[in-house]
Image (tube, rainbow, N blue to C red; front, side, top):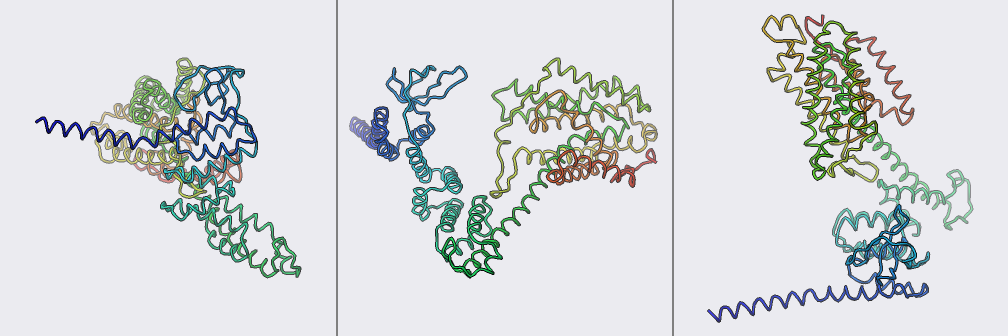
Length: 560
């Protein structure tokens, strides 16, 4: 037993010693980094360059941050603590400090307590090159990719030399391809005629703006096309013959034309995407109005305020659960549906059911209710707009290529709108509630004769439409600020969608919303938002003159 215990003890000691030996180089590197940065405050500007090179050669993780702050002029020497710190001026005109080694916390100090580590343009250019080399050799593919993108936009000789060496060992396909593009752009600018033509051939079809700029820059160095055909002068900027210039000119114009053609295509896709996202918002805003207007014939001017209540519900949930921002929208969707739906039922039971068959009085009553709800929100939350924070999973964009990307918030709203639409369609087609709603909308008197309680169907329908409007408010909170007038910006467009698609038709609402949103976004770039809205409205009026019942007219005896 003692022998086993002794063997186990020696085994543990050996493992501990091995771990200590493994950690030793890191400690030495950290110590070397600390010794070098201690020399910065006393080093003269003329001797700064060799010291910066030595610091950049260290493997300590603090090196990139130190060089970046030194280049930006944010590296200081704190006299009282005898330490290097990063200093940022705050609103109180003092400096917030962060230790370079992250070992000490400091209170804000005045400028007199600090000594700035000075640099000049030459040193800053040197640091920029060193940072490019560090990031290009980083273990993280994302860091390397970002470094190559920056190098493509702002090339420098040192980084290009490093890139020439690193491209041979790069394993990531996307990074390797972009590295090759950077080298081809360099070859286009400084190579011989054959190299230029080879670079142009390989760059044709690329979509990076920097590539197009390089091609245009090279084209501008050449004489005009008519000069190439008429001139026989051999003394051009590149000492090329007229025939060579013509060949290079044709290759450049073809490559640039291909890029512009591809750019126009992806610009159309971008307009289409934004049009569908606007159409999705209109769909969410109008689909609840389609149900209430189609079943009850009620012009609900307070429908926009139901969206406003849904947006404020999202804001309240984020304020109540600040640590659950990532899940706040998932919590807000059912909460907004319940809040707006209950308010809708109260409005129907308290006001609208007493005004059936009197559309003008109903319109005025719901308009008054909308004003009451707006003032109530101003009283509770103040008239100021409120910012709803977007979860991390809705931030950023999905990059398809360098000139076309899909923002996640709009992409999720399109998907969400279609989910709500098909869910509502299934409820109306497959459930007993949907059967009763369709029966009342098509022939109210016959539905009553079949023992369907039309008054309760009206209440549930109005609550359902209001609840869907509340869900629309959750989506709108991710696209705009939340304020008392949020719903007013969409109520008119919602009525236009309902009339265009056909009163009471869900499919008509879908087609009308997507059509109006897409047309609007395609017209905006050339005509501006105001004129685009006017043209869409005029076109809609002309369409209604020909088809008063919309794209998908409602069927039933009560309609006839």
